Structure formats: C-alpha cells, structure tokens
Length: 249
Image (cartoon, rainbow, N blue to C red; front, side, top):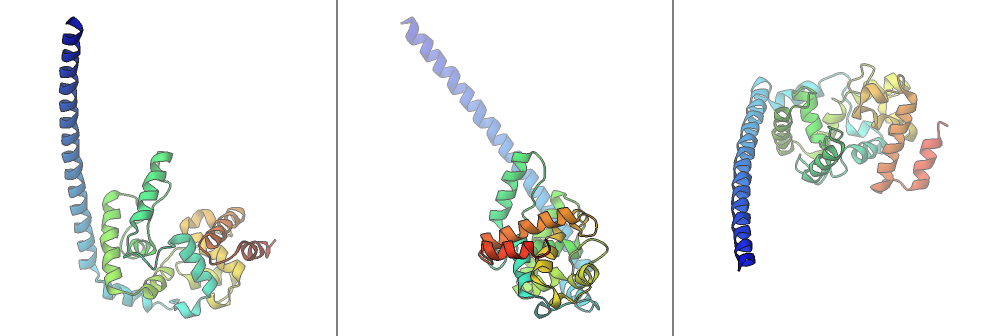
C-alpha cells in the first residue's frame, strides 16, 4: 500500500510538472509570435519606405540607362549557367524567396553557431543591391523578401537576372558584369571564354576575398566550387568541368 501511494504522489507530481512545462511553452510561443509579428511589421515598413523613395519602375530605368548596362544576349551562356548554378539553382522555379534554401541556411548557421550561409535568391540579392544596405539585420532581410516578391510580380526571370548582373559588385571597384570583364580580362562580356566565365561567376559571393587580383588562389578555389555546382545541377559533366579548370594551369 505504501508503494502504491508513493507512485500516485509521483504521478501527481509529474502531472504538475507537465502542466508547468506546457504553460512555459505557451508563453514562449506567444513571445516568439509577438517578436515575429514585430519584425515582420518593421521589415514591411522598411520595404514601403524604400519604394516611396524610389519606385521599382524608376529604379529599373536608372539601372538600364547606365552606359555599362549589358543585355543577357551580350553575355555567354556559360556565364549565365554558372551564375544560376552557384547562386540560386532554383531561380526559375521560386517566386523570389526560396524556403528550401532558407531552411538549409538556418540549419547550417545553427550548426556553425554563426552566420555562414544566407539562403538569398538572385531576386533577393537584386533587392539588396538596389534598395538596401549589406548589413545582416533581420529587419533588413525581411524588407528584402517583400521587395523580392514585388520584383517577381513586375519583372520576368530574364529581366531579373539581367538586372542582377548589372548591379552586382565584383571587387576592385567593378559594379557590373561589363566593368568586371573589361577590368579583369580586358574583354567585353560576350568574349569571355569558359574559364573566365566560371571564374567571374564566383566573385560576387565575397568580392574582397575572391578578387583575382587580390587573392588569385582563393579565386581559383571559388571557381572550383562554381564548377562543382555546375556538375551537380547538370550544366556540365565532370570531364568538361575538369578541362575548364585546367585551362589556365
């Protein structure tokens, strides 16, 4: 009888602990939702303020009127494939924000206990390049998402890719694909060979790190990553990738 009473008291104690645990979870859940709503609202306000300062139509007009603006047909297909493979391989399928990439990035960031991966799509990067700063604040990231959705509603994929390549930073003071190809290779974009295309495609990820003039070895390592992605997503086979990489060896 004593044992039975002991077990009963134990069960009651366990039941109380579970109730407390559930209440704590509920409170934490409410706090999380409040924070999420607050951040989303702040991000939306930032997005609307950016559009009020300069509409998307006006921004596109400003970019396309730059003397160095380059159309997609004036770039090698190898370069376009390399950019999509390494930056956003689901570019043609998402609506501006890739939930799968964001989820993967969150997992990798948690594992590393720091921000090692962003999960940004090409459209989000275009939004960042044209409207926002490069800081990693959550509010800015949310504003960037709203802007990406707006861009996707008003532009087709080819226009988005074209605008992105004309607003990306490639290091050494080059802020478009034409400036970079002429600066690094003394060539118009369309004249870049496969080696140069795959080298250039990797630079915007970290321009100060992968600039061929500043860190040629790191630029080559990044190029190998680009080629690996192109093989993974079926733009090249392994032999083709190896031949491109060896071309400047």
